[in-house]
Image 1 (cartoon, rainbow, N blue to C red):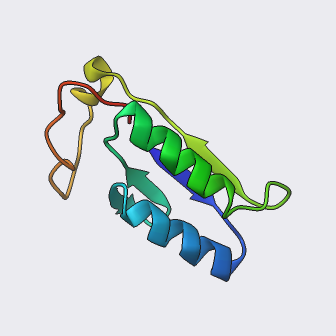
Image 2 (image 1 turned 180 degrees about the horizontal axis):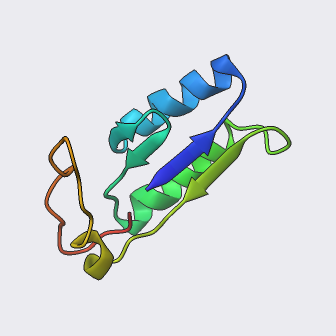
Length: 88
């Protein structure tokens, strides 16, 4: 899960557009991304180039197979089924 708080509209748009290529938006600034290690590293490298560390906040919350299966969703179905090897 990737969560961000970015005050600049232009940077926020770039970050959300980038994240849409890696996962599904589940809240305004929250994305669920099911990625292998290579794609996870690629995403972090690309995000690092888009944010301003003195103003922006981006958080990565990894979920294990055990915790992913415990996600409770109200209102919309879960993002997808869990593949065999992932980093979220």
